[in-house]
Length: 148
Image (cartoon, rainbow, N blue to C red; front, side):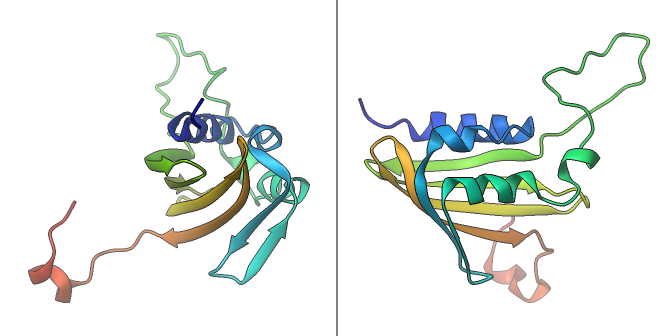
């Protein structure tokens, strides 16, 4: 059966939004290598990858309640809890794929996260992760682009 790249991205984001990083154990090989070209770092091993996610400063304590367990009644104050991660695009064929995400950090900034990965069997064995903050468009490019 072919690897379902879309389903993997959806499961990953759903787990991340619940602050449940046990999904790493299911989706990545034990000796996964995850590279961060912008900082020059290389994370080796599933345990280290999971530890990075579990120790992002402020995330767990500042996100608020788990949306999956939140119950609101008519008498409650209106609450909207946006997801921390949102899937924007998934591309994959065979043993390689790319997941593009938007992420809201604990400080309120929005970032783009792009994960380019290679599979070994049905698990991610190598990934390269790029992080980019959102920014305002430059006025000088206005004549050459359209806004999405």
